[in-house]
Every structure is written in structure tokens, then in C-alpha cells.
Length: 373
Ligand code: SF4
Ligand code: FES
Image (cartoon, helix red, strand yellow):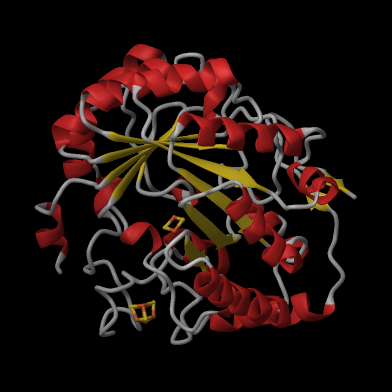
């Protein structure tokens, strides 16, 4: 597909509404940027309501309310209600630690469709060490019970890495115990905080192979009862994933301050100016913004992607990973074995196979990252 054809393509399928960067947890693989937005800079309720209207008018089908922790926003029920009124399927992506009966009741009454609840591990001590919050595990379990009691479909999100991956069988069992309809087992993606903590998080090849075998076995055990999705790690791949389904093709991400991005890490890319929903409509941004056009389609590609027969399958992989590891976002994602930079990933894997893990650099608003044991 050429860039010209893509500009006339369908609207985005999903709106990723990053309502806030505020969060009681401090996960060292957080997908938020290193520069976190303070509460004072967040969009107000009226603007979010307008964005939801524009999303529906544009033909978007799903809205994912995320953060940070989206339940810190007191107006969340109002936003969910507007999504429901406009026939947008609403998904709440939450740590669950602030979700009490009253709040969940309000969200259900407003028309919430689905919840994704994250667990850092099955073992309380390790889970709370990874998430950086004492007391979180009991609150998450309580939230899962409330969600189940409310009859909402539940997906349990399990982000795995070298410091919890050996517990994957018990983590999957936890999802079943909580009566999740779906479990998403996702390896950490290594940009932003994940890249800062890569040496602490990247699993060894033996760990990866054991986890992959466990997912396959669990899919058999839970067939017909629970779906298990598996997001594999780029670092052990031979070909990249189509990050975000391709740049500017399937998703539009709105930051807490209102910037519209093709992916949550796009602000790391130099030379791009991202428009704000404070000043432009979603439709105009999706159609016309140069930052969305920049890596849309295939015309921007260099070799080896330009002449590759997978260029309209994976769209060259991840721009942000290409930038972080090769210095140029237009290069093939180094997850691709055809990339001349693939060796950077091989080197990181070799280090993961030998090294002992360093301490985490926990995410933190408004402070330089510090290493903690
Ligand atoms: Fe994908 Fe580019 Fe690798 Fe081809 S060369 S598989 S398009 S990343
Ligand atoms: Fe930005 Fe992959 S995270 S393109």
C-alpha cells in the first residue's frame, strides 16, 4: 500500500486515552514516557468529552482508558458514560489498587464494557517489589473479585520478564482462579522505562523457551474456558511485530496533556511535532498531521524494508525501537534479522544470559531516575 492509499484509509480502530500519568505503582517497565506529565497539565473533562465525540464521529470503535492509573481521574465515570452514549466499546486498563465497590459500581452504571487488570507476579512480596507499592496485591485481588461480581468481562494482564517469568505457571493459574475470560501474557517492550531497565528485565533464552512452552501447554489446559494471548519479546525474534498495527494505521494515542500520537512512545522521535487535541479535531489530525504521515504506508522506507515482501505485513516493525537502537527511526526495526543492526539485540541477549540483574530504576514523576536495590 502506498502512502497515498493509506491517507484515504479507514479511521483508526481504537483510541488510546491516556488520561493521566499519575499512578500509585512505579513499575520499572512502564510504557509511559520518561518525562511524566503532572496532574496540573492534564486535559480537562470537557476536552476529553469532546475528544470522545470526535472519536465516535470519526468511526472509531473502541476506547481504551489507560494511564498511569486512569481511576485517579474523578471524571472517569463521565467519560465512560459518554463513550457508552456514543456506542464506543470502553475498556478500562487498570492496576486495580484504587478500585473499590463504589467506584466500580459507578463505572458499571455508566456503561463500562470491559476491564483489563494487571498483576506484577503471583507472589505478593515479589509483585509488590516489582510494582513498588506495598499492599497492592491484596487490593488487586479484591478488585478482581468486585469485577467478577459485577459481571464485567475480565482480562488479566501479566507483563513478564526475568524477575517473574519463572512463576508464569502460577500466574496463569491465578488468572483462572480469578475467572478471567482472557489472559494477556506480554513480554516487556524495551523502550522508555523498559529500555532503562533492560538489563534487569530481559529474560534469558532458557527462560523464554520455558515460558513459551508453558503458554502452549496452558492454552491446551484452558481451551474453551479462557483465552491466552502471548506477546513475544522482540529481542529473540527473527522478524518484528507490526507495532501498533503500523504507524498511523489502526490507533491514535492521546497523552494526558492532549498530544495526539501514533504510539505511546512517539515523542521520543526527533523532528516530529505532534498536534494537540486542544487545537485540532481528531479527524483533522488523523487525516492531515505530518507526524502521522511521516511513517505511514511504505514510501518512507529504506532498505532492506523498501524491497522486502513483508513491508505491508509488519510495516518495518517499531519506529521507536529503531530509533533507540540504531539512531534513525526510518531504519528497519533491529528485531529483524535482515537489519544490519540486528546484532544490537543479539548482544543484549548474550548479556542477559550471563549477567546478574541490576536494581530497578523505578518510574517516578518529576525526579531524575535513581537506581534502587
Ligand atoms: Fe519487516 Fe523490514 Fe525486516 Fe522486511 S526488512 S521483515 S519489512 S523489518
Ligand atoms: Fe512507537 Fe513502536 S512504540 S512505533
